[in-house]
Length: 95
Image (cartoon, rainbow, N blue to C red):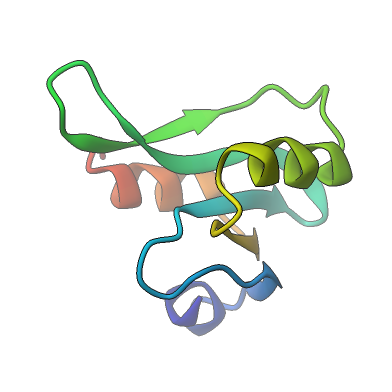
């Protein structure tokens, strides 16, 4: 959140989860337009990696309801980033 705000973006906590075990989901926007969701998922090699999903068919309310069913401890952070592609590449290590 600090990194986004330091670069002139906006960050807010939409849902506070458990501080010890809740997953983190980043809701990425560019000037208010949905870009995608960035979250850590367990991969086939049993390590957690950042995964970016661009499916925008789900509303924010639906996302919260679906995630809450499987992980009631998850965190949801909304980020409005000037350059989401760069932010995602730097966060995931693919840049």
